Length: 286
Image (cartoon, rainbow, N blue to C red; front, top):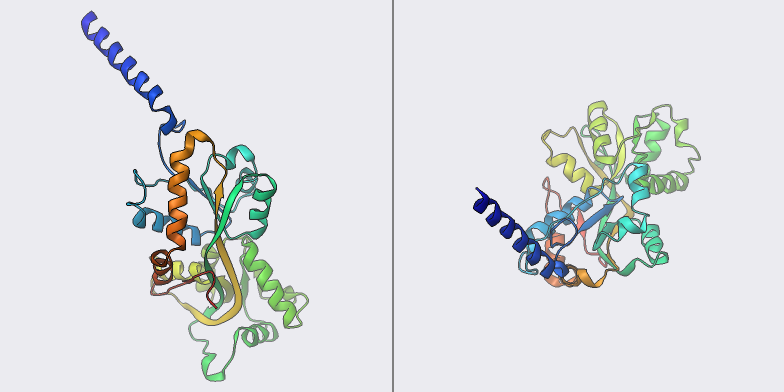
């Protein structure tokens, strides 16, 4: 029995010594990997993570792994303004330009690169047929307001809220809530789409979110895309300043960005299809 215990102790000590020799390759959690955080950009972030999972296996000595942070709660947003939290990541994926500026001000940013753009679209009941009338998004929204039709706003999405506000202002509508059927859902955009479908209303939403809704289990989507708008959101990959012991991960992260900027990476982005919809274009596309 003593001999067995002694062998176990020797084995454990050997493993510990090996761990010390490999310390430059390991994170505190014991993994060697590229870590990605997502800030205020779901579901486009989910697409990027799928790309990381499927397209980068030959670019790094280990398959990439990631940790994402939910983007909706105040606590999560505060966490991604904390230097210690930010420093745990190699990349942060975001559609919030102000956030990239904040990272730069904090000295945490060693590079920021646009990855793709997503268009804001207007969706509504499938029995609403604007095409024969030649109506664009603005015309439909004006009709929604005048006719006091049901309109939903996912107030948790900053990009949608700001774009929607600009559109209402452009239509001469100072307060869209003057439409008694205007509803601030308090939900994120994908969750709000289920409410829109159930109630037969209208909503402005990112095309990626709509694609995710169409591709969901409730495939007989009762709402359809009615019109494009002129509003886009660009999604960025922010490379985070790192330390020497993370140099291998840093090199892998740089390879990922180079791939995203390459012709092959751009093709994957523009060919990406979900729910029969290709919601993304390259950042420099017109």
